[in-house]
Image (cartoon, rainbow, N blue to C red; front, side, top):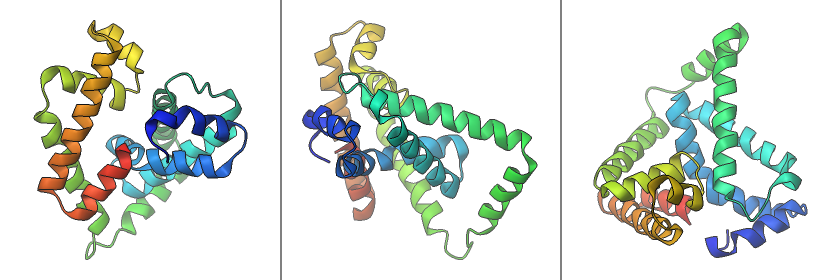
Length: 196
């Protein structure tokens, strides 16, 4: 996707039905959204299905998206609501539970590469978060993990919008550098695509 400074333009094109703009939004947000949803459901294949469901919903409601508001906040609210609905359905729908158990059984214990990579990424990600300054961590959690806009985070923390933006840029750069230094190259590429 184009740099984040032109996200509003990309969103406007997507709202008008431009599939390549939608693909750019998908590629940009997919990795981070996958990790976010994986934290809720703990099953890689289910998290991937949830990501696809969320983006399908985004495409379906694209005309209601306001490109001047925080798209990431909107996306993460939809994702959070969708995962809670899915977990509720799993709790009450025996057929869905059986399907999930079958998906878990399909993970080949001899080649748990996806599971290992996800766990390693989560470990490095949490390590990097633990090394952020207190204020930067608060900003990151509010904006990236809770889906708050910069304005909302600024109001909650009692700081300026520019301070929130600076904390986010420096925090993401630090996390990217940390994972690059301590992980493998594929993990670094994955992380870079999540942020840019």
